[in-house]
Length: 114
Image (cartoon, rainbow, N blue to C red):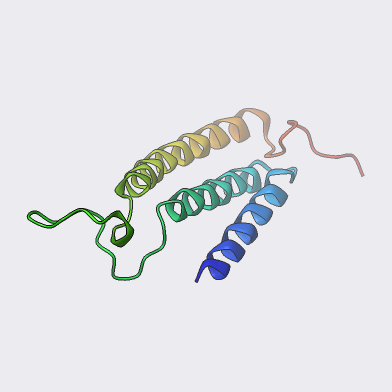
């Protein structure tokens, strides 16, 4: 399971970096989204991957920390997902405004000369 998660994080991060270096603004926005998903998966994996492990200690039981998953990374990832949606929406509005003003969607604001 850990190797699959590591490969998924690597593919998302690699694809995100490749898209961030593209000349079109829409591709940059998608690349930033992929990078944020890679970081979210990495943060989520720091809380230990435990199938059928409870995220909190149950009332009346002794707290054996080896049987439980840390809930803090889960809360951080949930917050990061909400913030990521808001930032992506803001980037899309800025992209549309920039395209309306300049007439192009290149990052540097001008079409390459052929």
